[in-house]
Amino acid sequence: MKMRWGAGILAAAMLFIAQPQAQADEVISPDIYQWVQSTSRQNYFFNKQHIYFGQDDKGVLDANVILVPVLKTYDAVQIQDVQAKRRWKMLSMEGYEDLVGCSEYLRFDLAADTVTVYKHEDLDSEWGVLGTTTNSKPVKLADLSEKDVDGVFYRAILKYANEHIDEMVERTEKEKKAKLNDAAKKKIAELKNPAEKKADKDAKSDKKDKKDKKKKKH
Image (cartoon, rainbow, N blue to C red; front, side, top):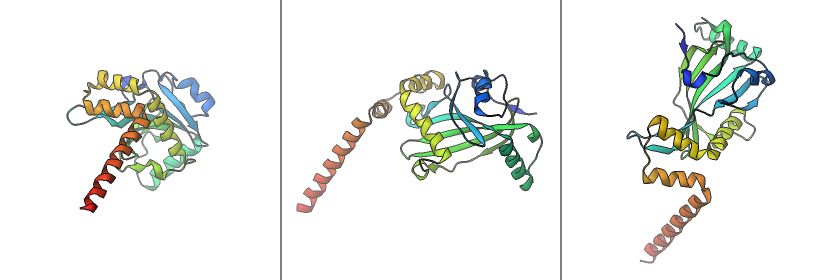
């Protein structure tokens, strides 16, 4: 029995075909998916209707964390490459003759400047999940060059998130039942006004320097 993605995430995708970007736009709803880029092997999208802030263990909104599902469609060469690697690893090939792409679930940690692909799912042409892998290893965004394909993709998602902060806060409160406390509100304000955060950081640094100098005199 093949698993299926949640209806809320993929309801508008009536047909899924791995093909060049010009045609992919015709079968992947732009109301749900934001296209970012196309390479010679893959088309990159993220789900802009299901991008949320995280929550701590008490249910309080964590504005340092952004969660978002993404979608990649493959061309024939990429499909063959994935199939060949599975054969080499002696993994099951059931259903992989119908492989067309993958879904991935990302966790951005803004404080640590990292991203983690915590779940990867290979998909068939009917959105069926052929295989799932999990991962907990974060990647430093600073280690990805400006031309790195994944780096370009991740930075585009963060740029979109930065431009839709209020929308994400409302969605996380309404759909995830997250609560807002003073610390969360402060962090949200800093995200919306980075200059304010920098000024606060500089003020704390100056205060610490003066305190250290005072200690040295004594």
